[in-house]
Image (cartoon, rainbow, N blue to C red):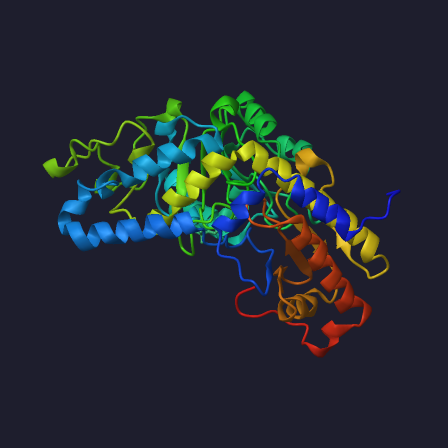
Length: 425
Ligand SMILES: *Cc1c(COP(=O)(O)O)cnc(C)c1O
């Protein structure tokens, strides 16, 4: 870096920010700077409104809310799925809002993992989120197989990132299915989904992605890349609220495949209330629903998606990249010698929506930050994730947070806290 960065740079960047107006749409705490939107996105006024509207439909319509009102509950999972599809680059009928990340994983792996003689293994990676790994282990166990030799976890060379070449090398003849994250939850690395899908298909292996950290933060082209299936949660970058309903994508070419885990909401809509004991599944991604939708936990997503539609995922990604770059540059300038190590890939194409830094005192540095009004995300044992979110954070938020961190480090303010994680961290 040649030029010294100052708060004026932040000010200028904020003045030129085409997304600046969206900040007012969110409930921001005046006394703190929220940098944890990759774990739980904030409430927007529009999400609040869509939730209250649906609550009102229950109040005023009772049972008729299933078919009447502005957003009939019976079709809600489909209509919200249609609106979400552009964010993953899919056709409307390929996306359905349902379940949670982990239950959708179970549904899709139950459906698409078909071990046959000589092709019985699942390929994953050793850096994935534990829930995904637990689910895969149990899926393998359910088939009467031993996951110790049927779940192959690609190793990371540096403990933080994966090399696509290593993943491709592990796509051997005995692999039936591949499941990988789009963006690694710790280091924020973006995997090359297009290339991995192409290589998997060359070897006749089905491939799916967990989009938890990429939905709402980067654009996707699932249909164009020919990804077989994907799933995600909507409470991180998508701001759907705590425990908000997740979503899944199934490639058109798999329509008509019987859901591994069926229920009456897997039904074709016209047939569902015939109450027959033979399931006629929906002829699109709707077939992968199971039971009655959690209407009130879908509701906020409706309002939130309006914001994404107006802002455009392209502009969101552009600002997000600029913010993480600015944050890193300011940190390098201001925190030199304090022992922070950046673990993100540095290149734009491989860097997701958050920064990941490590420090031996991370747990108590995070506590000190919180007490000083900066909300980070601690990842045991020594990681700090910082997510400046395009829709509601400003460049000045970034500048101020780093100044507060500098004050904590210069004065060793973290030393008055215990270096231990909390129950939820
Ligand atoms: C957030 C996250 C989950 C959470 O799963 P839930 O079923 O929503 O609790 C799972 N996997 C990954 C990769 C995540 O980032």
